[in-house]
Amino acid sequence: MRSPLVLAAGTAGTLDEMSDVLDLSQVGGVVTKSITQLPRKGNASPRITFTRAGMLNAIGLANPGLDEFVKSIAPRIATTPTTVISSIAGDSIEDYVNIADKMDQVDGLEIIELNVSCPNVHSGLEFGADPEALKELVSAVSSQIQSTKLFVKLSPITVGTPHTIVDLAKVAIDSGAHGLTLTNTVPAMGIDVITRKPILSNTTGGLSGPAIHPIVVRLVHLVYSQFAQEAGIPIMAAGGVTRWEDAAEFILAGATCVQIGAGSFANPRTAIKITKGLDRWVQRMSADNVSDLIGSVVV
Image (cartoon, rainbow, N blue to C red; front, side):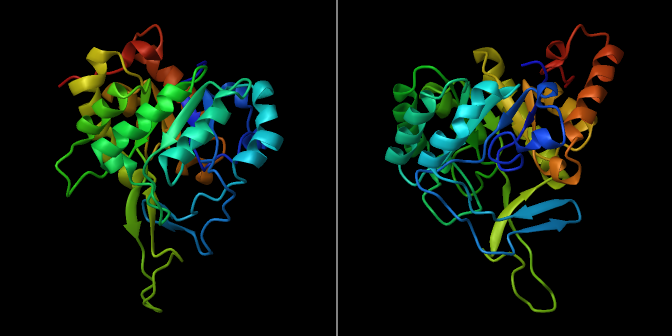
């Protein structure tokens, strides 16, 4: 990628809508909305709200569905001037396999990102919390695709289970994934203190933004230092990047690329500003390029 900055799933439109406000050739990649087998309207409003340190969303995976995406949107991927990553989601292994198969045939698509955990929907997206289910899913999808690389997007929350983020990362890679996205949003909730009702129509949603950034920095460091570094596994870090310093932290922790989500809502050109900041940081660190700094935190 020409830049380590990637526009995260669900925050940059279905594909290339952000080209209205920034030059996509200046970012490393863009992740599509999570595409499901059938169209989804998503949750009722209100389904997004801002907190003091981030954003709560319960969009509910609103998307046009696989057939419409392949017919009307996918043909633009080959001419999109950056790396395109397709996020996919499903309620069953059969859903994932079918969507991945169709995406694998799309001209110009380079990476498929499996959304295996999403706090925004009441459905079967629980594969990321169960090693056996995750193994079965990733194995099935990886054996189906031929042309694209496969990344697995994991949840930041494993509390209450005997499994760590490192355990799940190993399962994903051992089952055929080429890389990891760390992480999805954190399950959270907001309450209107006057009406005493949940702010989001879905009651709960996913917390993103600066509030979760230190959490994800730790998770990236754990996965990189305990597993990914030795195995040569690339990590895309996602969580609360609004400044170049946030992106630099992820890189020092072990991330190859950095996704920007909520930060693009605050300023659609955040990725461009961060890219410039990282360029200056690389020079200050006397490094030849940003990849020289991956995982170089001093502990």
